[in-house]
Amino acid sequence: MPAYIDIHNAIKSQIDQGVWKIGDRLPSERDLADEFQVSRMTLRHAVTMLVDEGILERRLGSGTYVSGHRVQEKMRGTTSFTEIVRSQGKVPSTKLISYQRKLASQTEMQRLNLHKNNYVIRMVRVRYADNIPVVFEETSIPEKLIVNFNQTDITEHFFQALTDNGYEIGKSQQTIYAKNASDRVASYLNTAKGQALLALTQVSYFTDGQPFEYVRSQYVGDRFEFYLENN
Image (cartoon, rainbow, N blue to C red; front, side, top):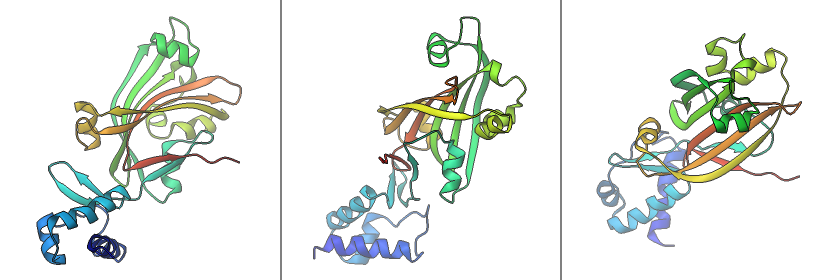
């Protein structure tokens, strides 16, 4: 068996046994190579395999860390980020960047079936799982739907607030594509400028077909993944 496979298995075993925990920084490649008595090239090959598997993650200018398990979203139905994170045993949290009342833009009018003089609540948030930033999110919501909601209802548990007020959540339409992180987004997600992100555009609807939310999201690819399930 090649040496890098042995090292791969040894590091993975140490992580499974709790020698290194989620979020821990690994020793430098030089120190690890000395520990396993192999060349740095061989050590790097083993580490790269673990990064590709999502077990480790490299942070530019900082080092290599034990990665948390990726948050997964099944591409079926409409589910809130909070519900997805909680269903996987993680703690969701949100940082609100901005919250504004604005006249609907042309795109918002089209996606949310609004008229020229309609207003939206437009907010920008960073969403976390176990205090690790996962997604940078820009959301537009028709103001007329949420006149009786307080800001906390909207920013922290919007889907729950909707159902508590008698709305029935239906389908969503989603488009996924690749996008490079801008300076601003990279700083909020603790990743590198230019890093490839998973970008998602989503319009969510009530069961009567009325759109209630237009979201533009950018996910860190090694912390989140989408998967499809066909019946």
